[in-house]
Length: 82
Image 1: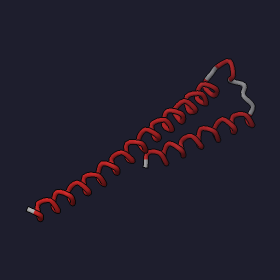
Image 2 (image 1 turned 90 degrees about the vertical axis):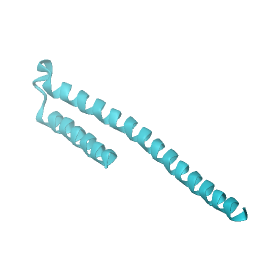
Image 3 (image 1 turned 180 degrees about the vertical axis):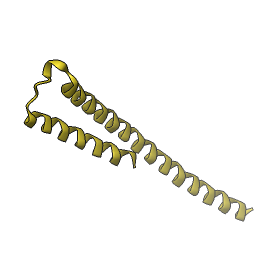
Image 4 (image 1 turned 60 degrees about the vertical axis):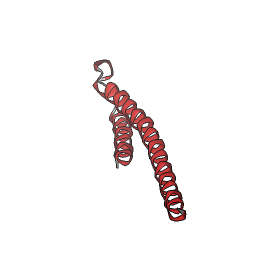
């Protein structure tokens, strides 16, 4: 009977560890989703700037800034996905 209780205690400890791991993982997924959304919004904003006909005369310097911002957002997305 005592062995059964010890076995149950071990199983409860293992369950607790696994539940904590799942909780931490779900928090990470939530954080990543926020980051992905922010990166997508940045990319959308940049694409609108470059693709907007009214702003077709963006100076090369401004285009480089927009492309650099897009590259940063893409790098962040890749980090969040991994």
